[in-house]
Image (cartoon, rainbow, N blue to C red):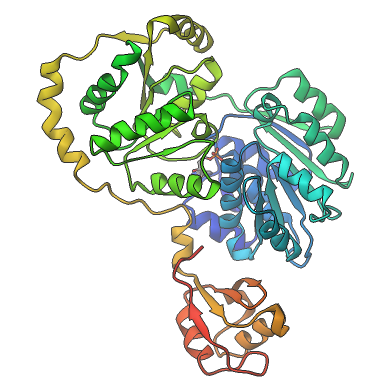
Length: 483
Ligand code: AMP
């Protein structure tokens, strides 16, 4: 039986409130099938594309099912890339917000000891990439004895990246009594074998896209000499004048080069590739999501799974070498039922790639003539006006949830034996404050962070200026940067 309202699933008021505030009015198709199955603790195999709401499909029931009181991680999500791991963490964090769930992301190229410290604290959900999860297992810095829910996301991508053995190693360290979920866009044999080995009578869910990405996206190609590509890029961007655009290149060097060209032309642009520091990659992605600049020059690290709304144009500055990455790249535009446009540059010697792609997507890509100079010139003024206007800044997904939450910093921590119950005790002694108004408490060595929910932050902040915590007045301040 399928349902069409989140209220039908008998979710707790905390999870429902978060779902509402994220503006998820009705479950998507994949959610209709997956949420009830996981709530009944069934193993499940989901064949579905990204953009179908599949992250929330497993995050909603897992947030519902985990036991807040348990300090050790209860859910483990394995994802192929750091970007995806972080995105899934954020989705869990947002959905579990009012249940005060703690979610950690563990991935490479990010300091191990910070993750280690985080994992020592209460953690309900861990999202990680295979390599780093194994590192934590080997060093004994992750506790897996209470894992009840395992999610293997973008399984086909992990197979392509050669992670299957690592996934099996991870599974071998988990309790046998668990719910296992595997999500994948395609289901090659190796994955079927994996499911056969580690799942018990799994439910199969397959969501056919009604209107596939390749149908929703207008696709064009230009034959162009390598040496002419930057000129063509300038002309195309003037003609298309997109609100937001990703330009894909095949190498880091090319990304740097194209980013430089655009910066010299005064485009608001930035870049992302695998050679950059993780911190920089994240901040570029976040700024792009919020619309701080219009043009993102990227390698395939930005092609998969990453959820950015409303990208109007994708340009393949370098043609991808296989159909699958083509589909992933162009799928950044035309998200969730919207129309989009993708333009691919093809140099003379790359014709075979174009043929392969056309074969893969099962249709021809329209070959276009290079735009005439007069056309470009006639549109230049309009283009200049747009690139000289600051784009409209969008709210982040969790912004609505953050509005009624204030994060406070207390100048005391583990070194002064501060415990969560000391903080809760003091806060609940304030008139009008109950446990339900207290969000996540994070106790570090000499600092404690606590979230105050339900718009009661100001009240708590004022009271704590004079009220002692654990016998002494403490310096309490508001944390500006929410996270
Ligand atoms: P995903 O397939 O997990 O990448 O999700 C695609 C997008 O759909 C994300 O931006 C989600 O926040 C959004 N989303 C997930 N579930 C719903 C829903 N029930 N209603 C509206 N948007 C949703």
